[in-house]
Amino acid sequence: MSNATITVLPGDGVGPEVTSQALQVLRAVEDLYGHTFTVHRGLVGLDAIEEQGVAISDATFETCAHSDAILFGAVGGLPAAAKRAGGPRPEQALFRLRKEFGFFANLRPVRPVEAMYEASPLKPEYLKGTDMIFVRELSAGLYYGHLDSVPGKPSEIRHNGQEAEAVDTLLYTEQEIERVVRAAFEIAAGRRRKVTSVDKANVLSSSVLWREVVERVARDHPTVAWEHMLVDACAMQLIRDPADFDVVVTENLFGDILTDEASMLTGSIGMLPSASLGVRRTEAGMFGLYEPIHGSAPDIVGQDKANPIGAVLSAALLLRHSLGLTREAAAVEEAVEDVLREGYRTVDIHEGGCTVVGTSEMGQRIRHKLTRS
Ligand code: NAD
Ligand code: IPM
Ligand code: MN
Image (cartoon, rainbow, N blue to C red; front, top):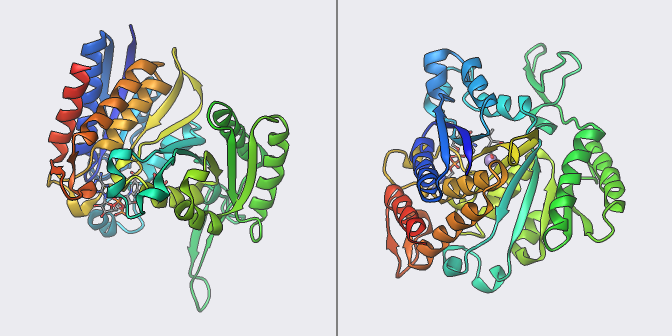
């Protein structure tokens, strides 16, 4: 029996709508399998800025620090953020959590469900056999570089000449590359044993160093096949032959962009979950942050339209990686597939002959399957 503490940070836009469904799935797991989950809630994003003046307060951060896992919705919203140009931004909540908890590996599995191949813009024959996992570096790179003029600050806009200029810095230390590449090789060893390392070594020094580290780490894993791939070519290969990928490891921004692209192999960005893991262990696994890869989706907020599956599958990853509840995680994943096989779809993954349901009905149907399995 598991006795775990989970901090839920629903955030902005559709974040609360999808997180509510994921949390109710965790509650169903708790009841069904006799676990005890203590749940704390915290403000992040626009509401936190409104009420506390920062995207995540120290108190909320501490609550997270005393938990086994964090279930996160989404942050961001254009109107309010635009009003406060130069002030705190909702995304800073994520940057702080990722950096200060050392979440350097962001796992984003992409596995199209056969029953809904038709929901993807790709022809079904291209999707067959697709089952890959991205390992996105999450706590360095362009998001966290250092300006020579202002150490600790990754970027700035300068207005000191006739013309304004802007600078962003892309910095990686060997150790920052090595730990995420090692994680990718270890994951590959438990899967189809292939790593694709994605970079832009024909242009970027950080990518040249990245390649050297990959080659060194690969020597420690002689049973894992590996390749270097340039990021532009990778964007193309993901569409041309997605089934060819197993584990893809790449730097922060490339991973951000490529996974939004790869999400369409599953039919929608609303389908993809993620787990952000670092160094701290929990009683039964790793301390982690779990969130769907999509954002606050301001265009569909409050309409019961958001697909909650990315959030629900993130809860499954939470069960597996932070609480060590493998059987329960698999049960949630199977419940999602069952509902999809029965033809229920949110509007983003809708295709002919299927039944369109809202966010809450999708969540309820997943819980119902879980209860009966
Ligand atoms: P987005 O992911 O919010 O939305 C892109 C498109 O996908 C929209 O058309 C939206 O309706 C659709 N979509 C997203 N999630 C969906 C779901 N669950 N079900 C159905 N459709 C869904 O990206 P955006 O519009 O570029 O960004 C909006 C805001 O979200 C920005 O402020 C951005 O910074 C933020 N954002 C936050 C996170 C996060 O919190 N992790 C991730 C990405 C973007
Ligand atoms: C994500 C998001 C974030 C990122 C944004 C909101 C800063 O796009 O988690 O994928 O770029 O990491
Ligand atoms: Mn993103």
